[in-house]
Length: 349
Ligand code: ADP
Ligand code: MG
Figure: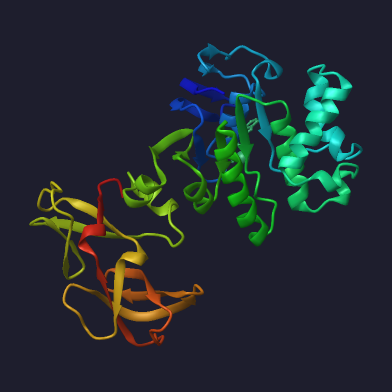
């Protein structure tokens, strides 16, 4: 097992795309680390550069204290699991799992034994003689995991390994993966564009945009205190309300309201700001309420155990999560009162 240290890691593809822009990052030994960001932000490139499948343009990759920047993939002792699993279609489950051992010239008997052991840990014992096309998506995913585990790597690199599973299986696999990682204690870098997956799995998250890290923190930190409007709008199961406003005596003036902000914010009067509040941190009132953002109920979306209500008022659209028992009628007036202690203020909006 090993920690991972990236210093000024940069990748410019032929043609000029700067997929990684001087990334500095240290991942602790045994950490479950998520790289999160929209499509094209450089997640796969970062993972492939870690694995040695791409050559860095500049900067370095240090694995467990050894500079591996110039080492071939096979000599880095990391295992990558791809989005499409990349199993060998003509090989049985046993042979797929044992493949990396064969490459490492582990003798046949020991190979089969270790493959069977790993398969058992992942609940695959009954499928050892099958080929990938005789397995469900979830089982194929476990074979890919088993193949990664079999050679006991110093780090796991996962590139969106759950994205080809249907929603329910994805949740099951997520829990399974988290438990497995805890048990094995292997340093894990997990790439995803799904913020819920990153929040649920990771010890820490790096939120990426255009080849750069826009925020690095624990799930609680990036959820509670997104560092900028990019992260604020990317994290959360419902998008954060980001309303244009102006600072006035410690509050933010949005349309005709002075919205209080958390204590200790240093705001210069007249400064143009963005006021951020998650839909979960507004309370809904039918009657006019002092300090609440008012508007006409435009859309009511059923979230299962709650509803997402969109109000259209002088401040623009505002979304609020309302409990399932409250009746909300489109076309009527509604009011959404923000929790001052959960309000965020941005200067980059
Ligand atoms: P992500 O995994 O976050 O979707 P990628 O790392 O795949 O992002 O891509 C980052 C950027 O690099 C994108 O703009 C993509 O088009 C570009 N890119 C990726 N692979 C190559 C390549 N082999 N050649 C040229 N450009 C590439
Ligand atoms: Mg990718």
